[in-house]
Length: 77
Image: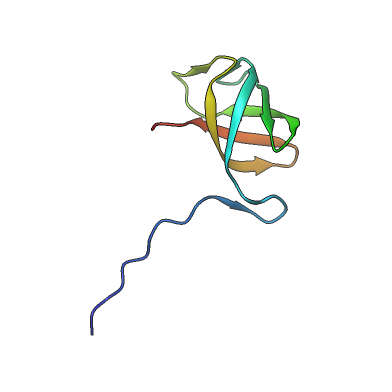
């Protein structure tokens, strides 16, 4: 029997559903939350990467949610 490789699934949140891209509206740095515009509203957001600073206008990928804070990473492509 041939094995079927599982494709990576997009991030998913039980409340928000499939997570997607957002745009930074207030600077985000490590341990310094900022804001993003996501699905027609503004959210508090933070990034877990120590060496990154995300400036306004940067496209980011929402990867998780911690109560009312979105966890984001830069869009690498």
